[in-house]
Amino acid sequence: METVLIVDDEKNYPLILSAVLQDVGYETLTANSGMEALEILNHANADVDLVLTDMKMPVMDGIELLEKIKTINPHLPVMMMTAYGTVEKAVEAMQKGAYNYILKPFDNEGLIIFVKKAIDMYQVIKENLRLRDVVETRYNFGNIVGKSKRMQEVFELVKKMAPSSATVLIEGESGTGKELVAKSIHFNSPRKDKPFIAVNCSALSENLLESELFGHEKGAFTGAIAMKKGRFELADSGTLFLDEIGELSQNLQVKLLRVLQERAFERVGGIRAVPVNIRIIAATNKNLKHETEQGRFREDLYYRLNVLYLVLPPLRDRVEDIRLLVDHMIEKYASERRPDQQVTGVDQDVNRLLYGYSWPGNVRELENAIERAMVLCPGNIIRVSDLPKEFKKSIGHSLHLEGISENAKLYETLDMVEKLMIERALATSHNVQSRAAELLGIGKSGLNQKIKKYGIKP
Image (cartoon, rainbow, N blue to C red):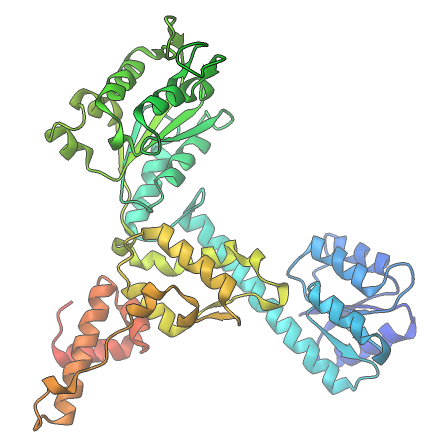
């Protein structure tokens, strides 16, 4: 049974409201001050679904109580009761996260409707939070999100790799989350309290990268006015992540190989070997095996790096993760929205586009699209107009009637179009029929009937 906490400094008012709400099946708690209400909310056994508070109270008014409640439970709805003369304060409360306000005096039926809507909303929020906890437990590792078979295999590999100190090579297209996986390995390893240092090997020239990796001694080159530690030294006892390792020059490949073999290096301009205890995680969007065969990457270094090997799938090969990723990103960027304008999801047209798009930029491109939509979306649902133009261009082209004969039968033409759409949806969803049905906007049983009707073999 849902519980309403009623707060008003007039002692009789909470009693009257309690009687009204109890008559329609709600449990009630009452408080005659903001401090008393906070004590109830902080009590371990107090499970409150709505706070109904007066706006004007001594010591702690309704707005101050609202602010304190939001620090205890940001999702708990707070509804303000206010007299006509304090409507401006009620609007201020709405801007600070109040669910709604109701003017005194109000009729009982109106109050009950307001209370029911607020509690229904809170029940949905609590259920979503519960489901999110389940999803995060089953489908997250660190901040990596995925429920597809490919990503579950990645999670299992990461769990096995993390306790080791062996070198890891991660391959995958740009935007698939290679650095995120590297961090997950590090922060689930015995080195988690030590530094995680990342270097992009393609971002600097060879000379600058050498100094960045190994550091330099004072006077090693023009401008070297003091000794500088490199990333290898800074990462001592921790993990060094070498991103885009395939872009490393032949000269630096030799020096990196020596570090891996001897666990020591020399600063630029130095003659003393500096011992180092680090774990190397390397990543590339290239096929390093192919690069070695073409003579662009040293074979001995390749095998030194490729002790533990992990391939991250592109987003187009794990489309069943898209909805999960979208929900995760909507929550991630929720802070960019006002509390009363939170985005709850995407509409069906957006859903179809997300599943039908090729995602050349992978998860990074999806995240950019959702972040943009969260800023531009005027309502609570993300629509096609809120997405980047690349998505709008991917909307299905209109049918060209010129290609259909003039004596074609309508039912035959419609059947042909329907069959083609079903085949496309099945291909897009990798034959996951529940997902294909969702893309088509029909039920799974209806899809099964149509598959049989047209003799489609998934």
